[in-house]
Image 1 (spheres, rainbow, N blue to C red):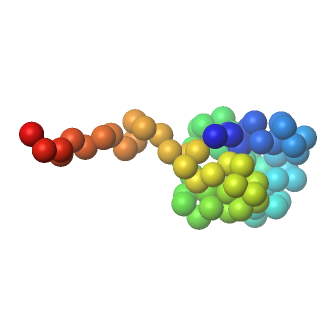
Image 2 (tube, one colour):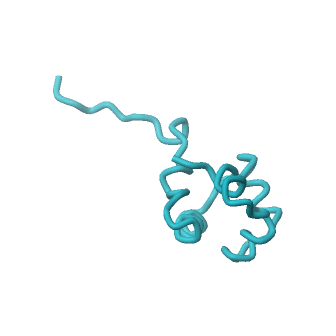
Length: 74
């Protein structure tokens, strides 16, 4: 899965131009690329759409935020 920072670099896009495309401030894209802020589902969906699925919603998932819950048969 590609990160947003990698996508921007690979496609030679600026944070400012991409921010305009998805309707957020450039500073928001900067903080997202740096992992300094969380992302809403709505923002993740807009980014997935704007990147034609190259940066999917699932790429924002952090395992430490969603620990595995055991509950199998014993």
